[in-house]
Amino acid sequence: EVQLVESGGGLVEAGGSLRLSCAASGFTTDDYAIGWFRQAPGKEREGVSCISESDGSTYYADSVKGRFTMYNDNVKNTVYLQMNSLKPEDTAVYYCAADPLLYGSSLYPADYTYWGQGTQVTVSA
Image (cartoon, rainbow, N blue to C red):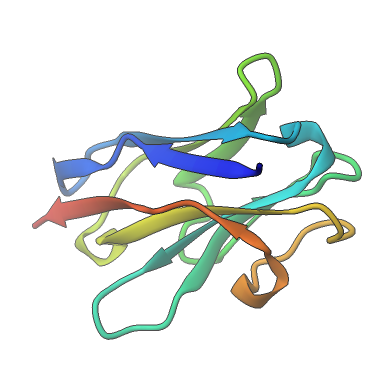
């Protein structure tokens, strides 16, 4: 059974950092496309970053480029999202998602089959 469990969210001041974890089970993180998404109250879920299963390349939404880094620890079978220089507009529930058939990667939520339960990130001004 494929499972994704996010952790690492919390409350942080603007300019601070958090590292989110997405622990995977039931599959190998090297073999699936994986993405991080977020959803703020009243807004649609949006793609933050993703990693390609084909070559491990990472992609980022313009709003987080230069501040967020996504990486895969295939020994721990866990994907991380390091978030630096956080802003109040980064406040959202953050989700990781995975898909076995997505060639390359995508920042579109509809392209992913498996989802975690989410972790809340709140950035105070």
